[in-house]
Image (cartoon, rainbow, N blue to C red; front, side, top):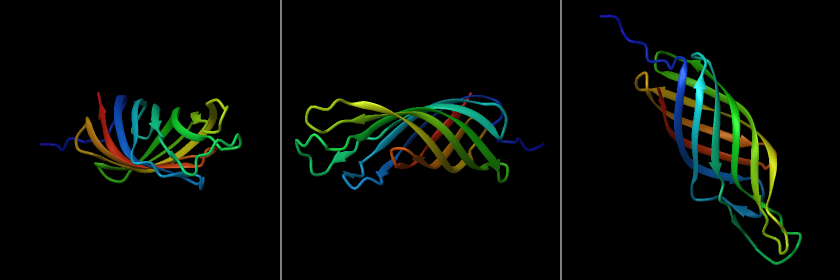
Length: 158
């Protein structure tokens, strides 16, 4: 019997990542968890597009009623082009480049929340158990707000 290839081919997929976010801003601490639901379309084995949301619930350090307190990132919604380099029948190196909006939570007295346009880049790996299920691990960076998310999760391709 011929072996069945397990690479993800064309089709719609959904996924979920859970991990930890950190920031280069010394005014906020790393949060406990970051969650990221995703949905996308895989054009071929190497190229896809994805919409995603990532929670970034940071805890403010040294909160005061100073009007100059910096806002901190709360969540991000975006779209990304995804790529994969197969390293065998089941294992892929992955990459992403995207753009989205990061909701900034204002902590200073009398300030309002606002959103920033925030590019994102990332890389990771995916292990395909079969044609539908895969486990993923990834590092993603939101470049304008200087947030890094390290996460792992799963992906289901229809």
